Structures are given as C-alpha cells and as structure tokens.
Length: 141
Image (tube, rainbow, N blue to C red; front, side):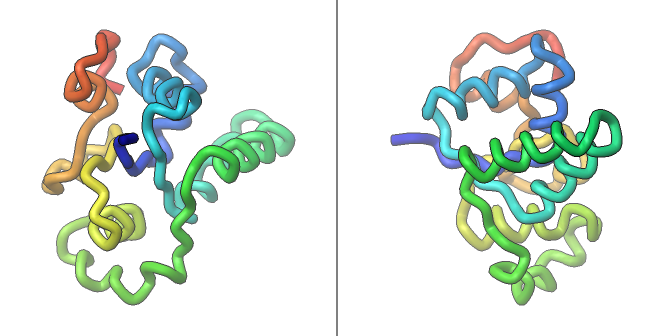
C-alpha cells in the first residue's frame, strides 16, 4: 500500500532547484508511484506564483499541469469550515495545509517549514526519507 503524504509548497520548489536534495528524492518517489501525494489548493497557487515570478508563465503552467496530474487536490472550499479548529496552532499562511492533514487523517506532512514543528504529522524531507529507510542526502530539505 502506498504511503499517503501531504507535500507542502517548498518540497516542489526545492526538488526543482536542488536535484541532490531529499525533496527531489520525494518527488522521484511520487513519480514512481511509491507514494501518494495530497496537496491543497494553496500549494498549487504558491507553486505557480513562485515559478511565474522566478521563471516564466510557461514554467508555472507546466508545474500546475504536473500537480494536477500527479497529486490529489483538496480545495479550499472542502476545508474552509474546519480551518477555525487550528487557528491557535499555526500561522494563517499554513492553516489550509494543516487543516487538510488533520481533516483527512494524513500521517505525514512533509515540509521544510519550522512552523509545523508543533504538529505530530510534521516531517522534514530528510526525516521522511530516513523514516522510510531510504538513503538521505546531506541537506535537511
């Protein structure tokens, strides 16, 4: 059975920017069908914004298409009512991501964002790679 994980925005960005990173290894696992990735609508928007800003519109569109093809998307409207449950736990910018993880019982929230450290589901890319007994890269991300 595939491990179901939530991938935060920075995993996709680090995977692209740093091919020797643990984030890249996680995306390879996704591409090989070893893990199932869940993302929120906010992750799609953040990834597109990053690639539009630092690359171009076509690169942003390519990433959007990739995310739609490879990940399960949870839309804001699906978690909007539950987000209030976690307002005291996390900053607003991460609220949608945490709510998706909690609402759908996702065991792994993979991110390189220390704001998630209080959450039991939080794994850095490196700690996740180690958890599944793969050889990690030296980077934490």
